[in-house]
Structures are given as structure tokens and as C-alpha cells.
Amino acid sequence: MVVNRWDYSDRKEKKYGRPTVRQVIVDLTVKFAKENPTWGYDRISGALSDLGYNICDSTIGNILKAHGFEPAPDRKRTGSWETFLQAYWDVMAASDFTTVEVWTKKGLTTYYLLFGMELKTRRVHFAGCTTNPNQAWMKTIALELTNHEDGFFKDKKYLIMDRDATFSQSFRDFLRNEGVKPVRLPPRSPNLNAHLERFFGSLKSECLYKRILFAENPTRKAVRSFLEYYHTERNHQGLNNELIVTIYRPPDMHAEIETTKRLGGLLRSYRRVA
Image (cartoon, rainbow, N blue to C red):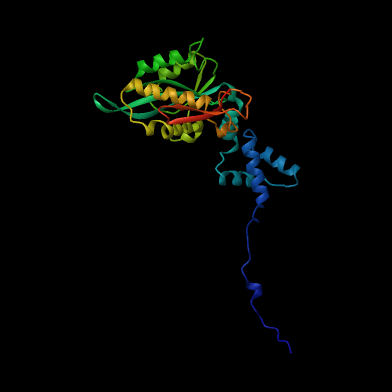
């Protein structure tokens, strides 16, 4: 005999609320917002419906907020950093300082080294070094960089820089007058100037940190020697392992291999004898 027992199943807690959004919908919502910064919630909802997913605006808003996206009106105004870079890649440069300790007659002294980088090609320009990057020094540098004949920034429309006080209002105004618009990064965001930061890492690990530097002129020579190596002899992963300045030499596979040494053998490169 089977006895029917009351197991209180009718009293079990019922689940309330909306069902969990499928992960594929979350992924597509984030993808659409990232790749199309001008799209609002309605536009994203429409794109999802084209793919067979009917999602309301509030759900899309919740997904984007959970993934760190700004509300649609703000995203529409600001766009994404990646999109901005892609749009002006050919006319954009970056500039920043790095420091190095140099032995002088006054003892160990901090020197400030200023560099500019053309983002499209990764070409780097050594603008100068000083122990005191004051306003007068920065004005001289700005004149040289924007010179209409051979200035490194003469064809650039945008210049990325951080909010260091050295990049003063007068410095930025001068750039604007020369047709170069300063793009100031948010505080504590070196990752937004990643290409130049990686260059600084290479400069220090491959050159500056491996030498004891005495006086300003030897420091300048060391930096310039590294730049020659960096442009013409060093392969770059970000450029498909190619050189920045390509020198095409059809290889003679039977020719001897020669070694080029810089900075006393600290930097080396290898090529077949022409």
C-alpha cells in the first residue's frame, strides 16, 4: 500500500523576480556598447532584436552599469578612448617626461628627460633634458617641436600629455596657437599613454639602468645612441616584429654576419654583410 504523505511541497519557497539574463546577451550588449560609443540603449536594443533577442532598455542599462559603462547620454558625448585614437591616429603624438639620476659636481642629480612619440610609426624624439623644466625651458622646447620646417610635431593635430604642472597653461596655449590640440589624460592613468610608457621601460632597462651616468652631455649621448638603435636595429613586437626605420637589404645567405655594437657593446644588432 502506498501512503500519500504531506511533504509540505505546496509551502516551498517560490522564486520571485526577473530571470537571469543569458550570458550571450550580456556579451553582445557589452560588445555593441564598446564598438559603438554613440549608441544609446534603444539602438543597442534594436541591434539585439535583429539577432532575435528582445531586451528592454532598463536591462541594457543595468548590464552596461555592471560593466563600468557610462549612461548612454554621457557615452554619446565622450565616446571611447580607443575610438578617439583610431579616428586621429595619423595626426596624433604623445609627450611625457622620465627621470634619471646623473652624477655631477654637485653629487647625484635628478635630470628630467622629455620625449615625444609619433603613435602611428612609434618614432621617438628626444626633446631635451634639464634639472629644472621651468616655464622658460618648456617654451623653448615648444618652439622647437612645432617648427614649421622640421619640428617633430609640425604635422600633428593632437598631443597626449598628463596633468603634470610642467605642461602648464601657457605651454598648452602655445601648442593650440600652432594648431596642436593638447589632450590631457585623467589623473593616474599612465595606461592611456601606454606606447610611450613602454618606450620608457625599454630605455631604462636596456640603457639607463645599465650605465653609471656622469654629467649631462654623456647622458644626452647615451640617449641618442639608444634612439638610433631603437629606430634602426631593434625589432618591435607592436610592429609585427619589424624595425621602425626599415632598411631593405636582400639577404645573401652565404654572406658573413656582422655585429653592430653601441654603448660599448651594451646594445647589439646583427646583419649579413652587404
